[in-house]
Image (cartoon, rainbow, N blue to C red):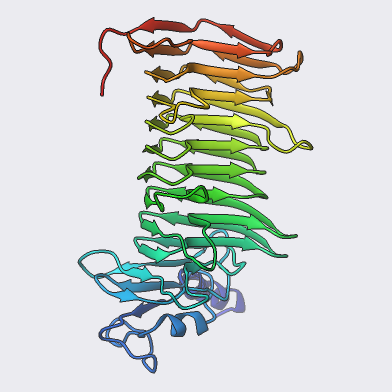
Length: 378
């Protein structure tokens, strides 16, 4: 045959090899039945997290942990996937999700340390008894494409190493973080203390989605996003937090939509500027359902906008707030804020302001409906 024909005949085989390389290998891990001298096959799984951490995984590789089993160690990947072929950590077998459990040993109070890697997916896992469930930190690296989904995360305060705890913690040194997705998870934050969060982005997170998660009460906030930009916080459920269900500050271009929050100590949702050198801009707070905000009796409103710019609060439903339904405070005549088409249903025995603008000459309020409800859902 001609050389051209031979090349064409080999093309399907070449393509098949490329597909296999993109799909990667699957390594299995069973603490009960495994051994670290095994090959990692389903019939000969690895045993420990240390063996997983030692493996330099390739794009498309999968590490599958046996359901119903527990490891007391920190998962710390040492290599990255690529955008179209991430590295995946997930469950296999039948039964409850595999569990990564923290210990009292120094350095083991983090369930997963992302270790500055990119394009990693963590799914179908239980993370518990640690100060941080998933830690994403960029000291110098450009970290991108991290997904946590379909997992249960329970965190604890960890004295004496520090009281700060978060189900997901993300921040940067001189590096960057982009494209984090936190979705379809169940969070159980530490329920007391002023430094306990469900999800806590401290700074430098750009391009993120926090969506369809449920939260039990946190000592401070269910979701706190600070010094970050270009994100979506959507269809999450939380309440009874020490402070707020959603707290966004010193950030830009974030949509907060279709969330449910109730019975928080302070605001259900607050968007504000905190640092003197920062401004919070271009937020959309829409179609959220807020109930019984301000249970501590101070800082009371269903939704609060404090010293923000070009922010739109629209089509939200707010039931039975302790103070105002929506509270806006600003002194900037050019703030460009809008409060439109919201519905505030006040308790019949409570003196509630529907929309309260305090020194906010640049905010337009129109089409809002404040009513006194004869009966409010409990």
